[in-house]
Length: 174
Image (cartoon, rainbow, N blue to C red; front, side, top):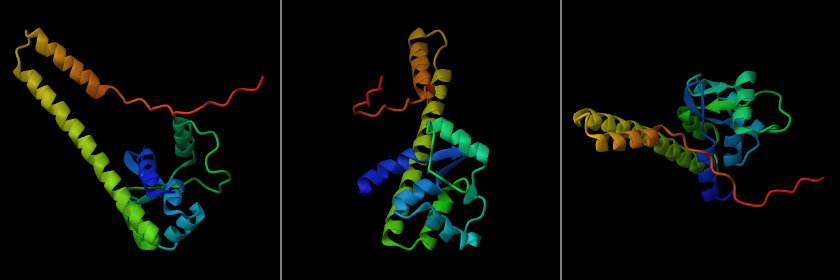
C-alpha cells in the first residue's frame, strides 16, 4: 500500500472504544504489511510491554457494536477471537516489537495522526469556549450577535457526516 494511501487509511481507522482513541490489530496489520496473527504473536511474546492502558482485547459485544457502527457484516473473515485495540501509547510500543523499516515509518505517521487528532479536538473546545465568552460579554438585547452566536454554536455541535464514496454502484439483479 503506497504511503499516501496509508496516511488516509490511518485517519479512518481510529476508533473511540472505552473512552479511548484506539486502532485495531487488524487495521494495524494492514499498515505494517503483516498478517494480523503475526502482529498479535509479536505482541504476545512481549506482553510486559503492553499494559491495559496500552492495549486491550475487545469483548464480543464491543466487536459486534463496532461492526454495526461501521456497517460491515463480515469483518476479517474467520477469526478465533476479537481484535486487540491499541491506544496511542500501545501503537508507539509496537515499534519496539515490530522492527522492520516499514513498522518504524508507519509508527511515525500514526503518532503524527494521533497528535493532529488531539490538536483538532483541543482547537474545537477552545473555539467553543471563546464563542461562549463572547456571547456573555455582549448585550442580550443585541439580536444580531445572538443570531451569529446561535449559528456558530449549531455549526460546532453539528456532527460531520461521512462522505459517500465516488464511483459506480453495482446494479441489482432482477
